[in-house]
Each structure stands twice: as structure tokens, then as C-alpha cells.
Image 1: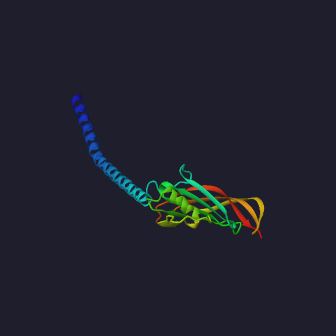
Image 2: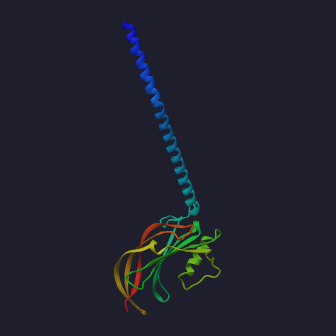
Length: 212
């Protein structure tokens, strides 16, 4: 009799386990479906990101970031000419990318507004050609037959900022008197549809503000 009871209890336990297993199967299936959906969405998101990254690279090709801290980059600051003091120009020459970044700091007021342009040259332009073009942008001694830029890209106004200014001294010239300032600026960004992007940088330059 006891054996029969044990067998009955055992059978009942197996039946409950079977029922539990039967109930668990749909739950597992649901969890598997959810996992598959999440994996699919994750894969799609990754593909979209890769596609966006690819578009970003195509619109701004590798090697087209203009980094003014690069070892091969040459900087030239100009704040006077044959006629005396002028607005301040800072040129950064990127010979390997056939490009020149020109930063202008206006000297008409203590606001010292900043603007920037990227000049793009043909791929076959030499370093010497860039030097001659650069000379003609600020010097009175002009070179003939210099290369011309194939494109000019203006950076948005918000990309150029005057951070601070400090009075250095006061000087007199035949064309007037000037307060000389050390001006700190920040530049970054790229123009619309511009294949060049200027990596953010800060620098200081001397600016001459006429006082009379």
C-alpha cells in the first residue's frame, strides 16, 4: 500500500514538473524572441552608426583636419606693412594638405573681432609656390606667377572668438599713436561643405589700436 502511495506521489510530482516545464517553454520562447529583436535593433543601430561615420569621413576625409600644432605647420604673424601698423594677420601653412589658414584680428576697436578663411590649393602646388603666394598677401615686394587658390572657405563667425586682451605699451609712428595689445583668440570649426576642418586652438597675437 505504501509503495502505491509513493508511486502516486512520484507520479504527481512528475506531472507537476511536466506542467511547470510546459508552462516555462512559452516563456523561454518569448524571452528568445525579445533577445532576437534586441539583437536585431542593436545590429541595425551599429550599422547606422557605421554609415554615419562613413559619411562623416567622406565629407571630411582622413588627413583633412587642419591641426595648427602639427610639426610641419608654419605660422606667420603680420601686424605692420610699408605704410605702418595694420590689422593683424596670422597665417598657418599646411604644405602637405595644400592649404593655408588665414586668421584676421581687426584693429578698429577693443572688441578685436576675429575672422578666418581657409585657402585651398591644387594638389600639385609646391611648398615654394605656397611661400610666394603667402608673401603676396602681406608684402609690398610681390612675386609674379604665383599659384591661385582653387577654393576659399570662410569659417562661421561663431568659430572665431576673442578671449581676452592686455595692453602692452604705447607707441608713436609717423601715421599716429597706437596702443599695442596682446590679444588671445580661439578658432575652430569648418565651413559648410568644406572638406577641411580646423581643429580647435588658442593663440596670442599683437594688435595695434590707433588712438588718434
